[in-house]
Length: 460
Length: 167
Image 1 (cartoon, each protein chain N blue to C red):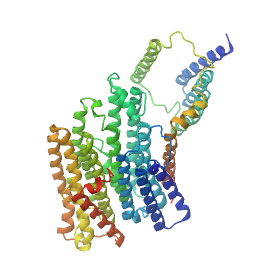
Image 2: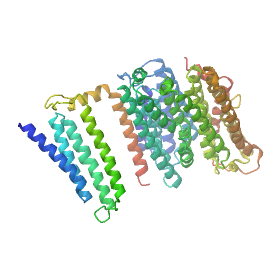
Image 3: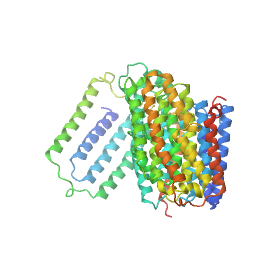
Image 4: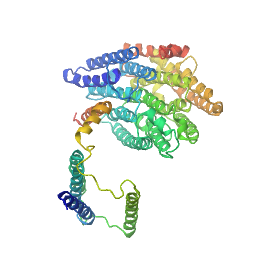
């Protein structure tokens, strides 16, 4: 509860910050300070049950899974703001409002990690999405940004409508919004098609939010059109929060969708992996490649839905952390590049050896090379699939093959940086930026050597 | 025949006649005005059923906000008799068939519903439509979503200003 209330309040604080100061550095520092408070209050929430004592009527439930994910999301946002904060304030004329919107998104994220009622699921998804439509279109003079924003808004509105329809059907079948009550009442097979259909509609809407194929069509355009700083935020914290909501809703209810669910999910996983990886191979722009790679990574995260055991729960948390940290780093560097194509990276290693080295670590992590966090994230996902169901072997083999395909396009960037001659033009890179990059790379290697460093906090 | 029954029949007749006029009148603006009449008649029914709050909300939301939106759209698009696109026979037939299907379902639903067979609507009893009960539900059972939706509106307002303000 701490994180929900405080993130909303901090959003208001950021709004008022713009009244008192025009200084962009000061605004960024206020945001960083606010995120530190948010992190502290969330940690406090783990050890002392409720600091804000509110009668929740069982609409929200705070378990270690949700609170731990909150910590991951807040730390990722903190790293993101420290790394790219100076670029956020450059996007437009309302730097403080952008941070306010980011805090509101965090409020939505914290609701999604703790909802126990379909009403709260709906509110969380909306609070998370609406600020994003604005952030996508925040570069007002840029036609591509406007187009992306409108596209995202219209598609998002439709997916919201589909989710509402699903919630209405589930309510019709069970007479309740509460997840446990729904679980209890619809397990009797007397409601026929209502409950499975409602679940399917919610499934479609959430699959849209996490850009799983075939609901991924908005992703490349929106990620490409949005200002790069905000793409970084959308592709990491927001996407992983969507998966947490997904896992919370579906982890125990797969069987209720009937035997068709056992067919739907593998098809969606393979389609997502296929579309993401194969299309990413043909991209010329690194930003667009990253958009498709985020679809491909979503395919791996969907494995957490395919199985429901302790390995997949740990795996999705580990994946959220590993993927967020690496992607924030890559986007942080991308924002500094003047040319977003692969050729723009030519010869970066000679001009900025440290930046190129850290970028290599991030790319290796996304590709899932051992000794990086990405390897264990993928390993946990695939291992959980094998653990719960021996016949999932073919699915795991397909996933590994696609992971091998992904190595190709991640290594193209590394190849451009190290083995091609060129003059990679960057904007000014200061010491703090490099320092944060090194911290991010160290985090990835540390988690990659010993993932229990991260996961033991989950059981703490 | 008591006063309440007289009012009931009057409101029912008003609602049906106005609804027919919505369909019959050629001028779209007149249609909208007749539709507002329908909403007023239905609000009257709500009051008869002791649901004052619903009656007021029905007026504010439908007759107030949505109908103004309708009028704006009609005036902006400058719809009138001359500019109305020609409807061919098939369009009319399709409309009649789909409308007839809806009517059939409604009639059969009312006929089959056991609970409402041979019963008269109860006037002046029941308090489910009163504002006190709504307030209790909102501020007791649904307090958390009610408060949290304020964050949603706040973020939408901030967004509207960020997008809409001139640089």
